[in-house]
Length: 280
Image (cartoon, rainbow, N blue to C red):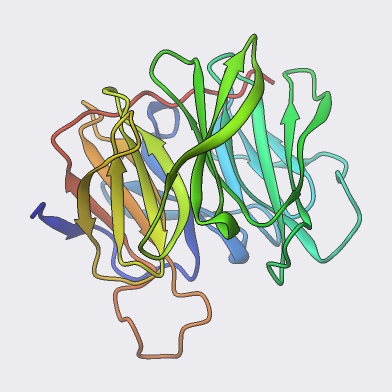
């Protein structure tokens, strides 16, 4: 069994979306419904408040970062802000951004969900460097993790309500031919990442674990996490050999699941891929 270390303690309410980037000094993640970005540094964890919601974030190719706020994006020109909010993408207060990532070309893919997790109310958007937006998927349940294979030809994607990881072909930076990759039998699939060997690592909400599936969709590794609501994972460290895992205490009673809201780390025996910055 792989040894898991709690590296932060339960400091977040709904920790999500970890990203390792040298541009901000290492590991950064969101405390989503508190609207904060959290950065792990030698002296502790630094919080940056960006709005009512901070759904996910990525570095920008020209410096700074992009962050998905409740119903629109925010841009910053330096690693620690400030953030300027762009116009909202929609007006329905019952829907918010949830998770996303960048294609090898630096295009942002940004997913949404209803606050009540009602089926069919979410979407997946494609947002180019110029801010031009198109809809990739309508009628999504909970749009969650998205990440690309090492050669950039495949994109793995989670709509949590399906209980599956799906896969697209990436043809000229367009996602086509969606099909099932694997069904998750433990908890619900949430955020995911891909390692340098093509393995797909997915956080299991309600499953107290992270699963790795090889390129054929076969379960090849299980990391047990001492918190139930495992929300996302990414590789980091100087050699990208450490798997960082976020957890949530959303909707948990006080005193239940005491390590929920922590970030955990495990030496996974494989390296990850560098984060792709948003080209905009």
